[in-house]
Image 1 (spheres, one colour):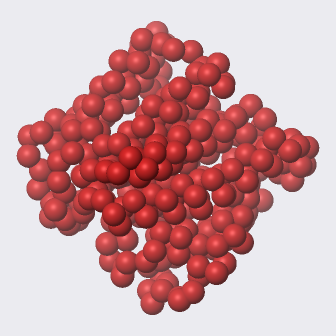
Image 2 (image 1 turned 90 degrees about the horizontal axis):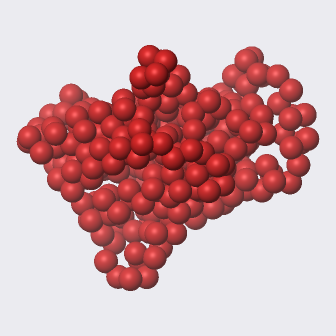
Length: 300
């Protein structure tokens, strides 16, 4: 990989890692309702990317289902999870999209795996279980369960994408934004309160965080990522995207003062080792499985 392209991928992973920390801050510390915050994000994506709605894809019904999976449902679960889960733990847990995508490609696309990827899948889940389970209280983090559900839904969306003719990264973002914001606003109206007041009252830092998510993540991050996917093989890029959860952990500790625990460090090491093993092994039926949720709207 050319050095300038590595720097570009480095920047993309940094943006993704920072954004999950900012999102956690908005919905947990500031208290903006998570469904409403997700709806605002997708509204901005749809508005910014209006020119990319053309040409219209042929299979809009399948695209609508994909948008629900990698857009509305994915981000609803992610942001609800972030209201209680720490950003550093969520950044690692979100990487379960990689083993889940691999398992789904086995179930629905006929992919076969060897013992190495099988071991990687077990390690990825074992590390997350170690992070999520508190042996002191014999409890498990409900927030991280939402993150796992988000990873699963996003991976299902990736499987559905195999049924569609290829579209560009920004065109996919445009249609996901268009199909996602109304369902999110509807569910926010039904299940949340004081949405507009809390969002406006939060002031410019939250508005800036929204703009960062729209422009920095959905437009720059995913646009640059899809550009790199056209230049390089998935097997080269996917292991390098593990910089994303590393940045998520670092920013969570530095910006949100999240504690560094032995359980977090050991669980992250085990889980990310498993994800790395899966990422470097080829998936013939669904090469994008090694990228997990990044085949859709990204990690955050």
